[in-house]
Image (tube, rainbow, N blue to C red; front, side, top):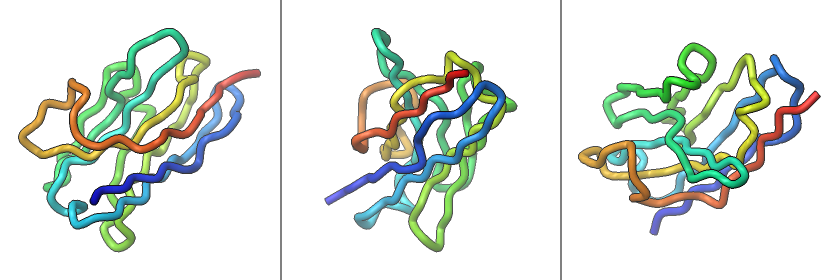
Length: 121
């Protein structure tokens, strides 16, 4: 049974930073690819960042250079460090676990309940 629990969301001003965490339970952490997705009001959920079991990372163009995804192998946790936040980064952020053979672009695998990130002045 896979369980993903996100935390770390909140309200931040434009230009600020937040770090999201995803606690992963179940025997998948070293096997599955882990990703972060987000859904803004009125929009579809979209890919933000992902990391393979081997440590290869991939980012949406909109967050490249600002966001960093990392695996905390010791604690079965995946992090998303978000810097230089913009108004358009406001969304519910979801953690995802999927088989490494899956594309990052698709509603597959397991999602957590999400954590709200609001960027506002």
